[in-house]
Image (spheres, rainbow, N blue to C red):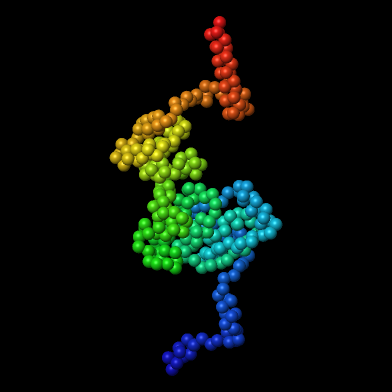
Length: 311
């Protein structure tokens, strides 16, 4: 008797709604929909590698959002503790905030951490003018996500064999070699101050990759020397510092001697310490005005000296 009661309890009777619902309506319930979600409920993706700046392009986007709204929905995933996490659409979210909007249209999709990471990286790599540091951390995040998945490369593709193959897959999608992807990832080993110099194009990409092999303290010493001597290493100098670091023979004095040596085809450069000449100029003088005045005074001195020699 007890067994029959348990069997009856386990039987789930169809509701009236289930009986009369169509296959189309049931499919519609499973289909992803665009929802207007409060911006306050959307958190940024953890360690998002792409900078969201309030620059001129962002202000133009904010004006567009203010006038027309967000035309392309963002992509979010629900969080277990409530709210949502932005996967694709960080710039649209920032533009919406600047435009004074409280909500943003988003597609809500269930994604695990690795799926979300891959989509986040891929959606942002379509942008123009991506800084080397952004590519570096983005490629690293995607590479780690793909390696954690272990069996899948792009959520639908063939078996993944190893780290180099993962880099090849990423490179194929962005028009780079797997080796070049790995070289970008090396930049994540640079200290923030040196990586900023790479983004600002004060240090070229190839020397930067070599410098990434220096220990953190060596990089700090290098940065201080570059600042004090107003110079950056060539590729050959960076390669020498990498080799000396690996041999345990790189220190502050060696870094200084390498950076201050005359490079091939480099003209001798004269520098004047700022504190020696600043006191002679008005405080509101620009660097260009100072340079022009120095050249003007030197020309006057040269002409006077020429006249004296002609007497």
